[in-house]
Amino acid sequence: GTGVGIAYGVPMAVVARWFPDKKGLAVGLTIIGFGLSPLITAPLANRLINEYSVRPSLRFLGIIFTIIIVIIAITMKLPPQDWQPPANLANRKSDFPANYPVNMLKSRSFYGLWLCYAIGALIGLSAIGISSPVAEEIIQIDPGLAASSVALFALFNGISRPLFGWLSDRWKPHYLAIGAYTLILIGCLLMVKAEKGAVTSYLVAFCLFWFCLGGWLALAPATTLHFFNPDHYAQNYGIVFTAYGVGALIGTLVTGRIRDWFGTYTYAFYAMAVLAILGIFLASALLKRERSQLSNPS
Image (tube, rainbow, N blue to C red; front, side):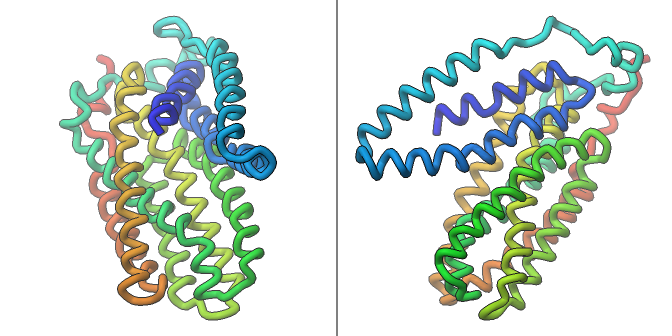
C-alpha cells in the first residue's frame, strides 16, 4: 500500500510537466494503467498461486515488478524548468492562471475538491465492493455471470479515465462533477427498482458506477493541476488523494453495515443517491477556482 501510494503520483507529475497544455488528457491516459493492470496481474497471480503456492508466487512477482519498475523509472525525467511545447509558447499566458493559492489548505476550492472526491470515491468503491453480491442476492443471476460481468465494469472504469481527463481540459470541473453525480443518481434509481431477473438494469447501473469512479480518478488529479501550483503537484495531490482513502474506508464499512441491518443491499442505493445529491450541491458551491486564481498577469 505504501509503495503504491508513493509510486501512484510520480508518473502523473511527470506527464503533466511534459504536456502542460493537455494536463487532463495526459493524466487520464496515464492512469489507464492503474485501472486496467488487474486484467493482466490478477490472472497471472492466480495462475502462479495455483501452480506454485503463495510464497514462491509472491517472491517471483516481487522480483519481476522490481525489475520492470526500475527500468521504466529510469526513463521518467522532468523537463527543464519553465519548459513549454513549441506550439504552446505563443499562448502561454492565456493557458495558465497567473496566481495560485499560497496555501492550498486555506483554499475553499481545495475543500470543495476534497469533499467531492471523497463522495465520488465512497460511492464508487462501495459499488465495486458489492457488485457480485448484489447480482447474486437481488438480481439472482448465475454466480459465474456475476463474476464475469466485472470485466465489463472494469472496461467502463478504464475508458472513463482518459475521457474525463480530456473533458477536464475543456470544461469546468464542477460541470463534470455534477455530470458524474447525475449518472450515479440514474444508477441508484435503476437499482432501487431492480428485482429478480433485472439483468439489464443491473449491468447498466454498475457500468455507470464504475464509469464514474474511473472518472473521479482522472478528474481529481486534473483539477488539482488546474487549481493549484503545478510545481507542487506531487505533494498537493498526495493531500487531495486522502479523500480517496477516507471514501474507501467509510464506503466499505457502511455498505456492509446496511446489509446487516436491513438484510438487503437495496437500501445502500438510497444512501448513495443522497450522497450524490449532496455532491451536486457541494460541486456547485465549492468546486470552483477562486477569484484570486483568475487574475491577469498584469
